[in-house]
Image (cartoon, rainbow, N blue to C red; front, side, top):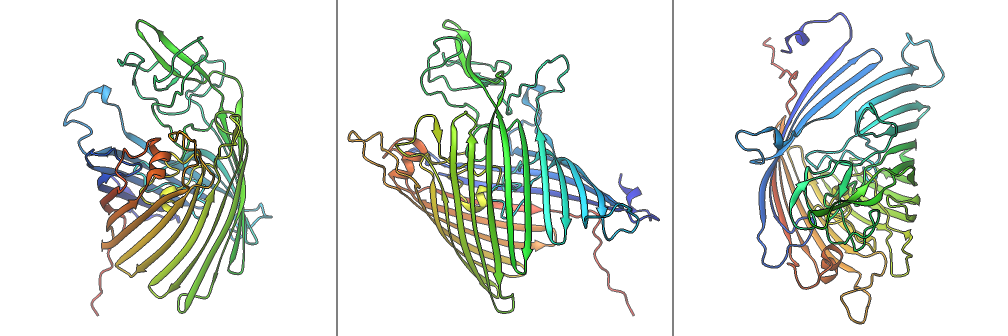
Length: 508
């Protein structure tokens, strides 16, 4: 099928074709949240299969990536149409060069390099704290966007825009956007499984419906459409990233504006047939959230001696959150890493603001780390700032990391001490005392081994010393869960390069 690609070309076109088969077998006994006392651990294998085609010629860089994500046994040996489709396009983008000072065939000059990149793509910047591909997740993360990318005299400037819609708008006279992949069936207020009403993001039926447009109680999303700690995909976004390296020190500034569709609470059904409560996104206007800040990192020394790396950053959020509350939040980070030969040591501290007992109902001080890779930063057990949620009171994370890296294998150990950033009232306490800020410790151990050029094995084990404060921020209970959760996995990552040719020794 790809034999024509092997024929010689007179041009300088470059083709690439790479695959990936990544299986991960996990034993989860408290991954993401604490297990109820007496409950059993979960055991399963998930899989990602991905095929990526690349093409480079002259001023064009084209990439197309398709992937299939599933859990082993999730589909029967034969399936019907109602079982859905998990085959998806992971990336499909093209980058076109407009200016290149090194290319004499381009007459337009003025900038060292100017290009635009359009299509479905991953946004990866700095340490993937706020923008990353979330590669740990089998389905990963990508955005439908247009990027204008410029490089000039060491400066990098990326400008991006995106606009999301549910359909092509044929026969539609508005641009309302329902954010997320809604489950086909939900449970109504009578406990019956029914089809999800069109245009509705379902809520759990723990509230009662008064007027048609209002819902009392404390409804929550049945399906968490998560962008890290929250639950709503943006309607549109605009971003600017500017960086410059001076010697061994890099300055990087980020401005990211994401706009979220406004909604109203609604229900479908009746008292006799049962209600389906939900959010209906047919309200004009958006809630605009602004995230902006600066990251500085640098190195001192080199690999032959003692290499010292450091990083500091500060980010802020303002405007409105997804639910229309007034937003004022902050995130600070600082770390240092020492490397001598194959061994490295690191210390760091992260602060993400949250709400306390004095926060007004119309305000929100919880920092949301956008669309990054929280798995890399706040513990491999993914208790915070992923689809499992984040503490109302924010988070402090003081951590220590050690790693040994050789050509064939690596060993690493991380220790995290989590604390609340703000005081939270313990509503289970009759005297309404503050919750203890200490959220316990997490210990992560990872071993990697390169079996061959295309295959790596990764073994991970993590456990947590949790407490009642951990349980309260995760489950709103106390003394009802196992405070010693564990998690283990074995991941086999096979990434063949189909055009790779093994060098053959030539006999003299």
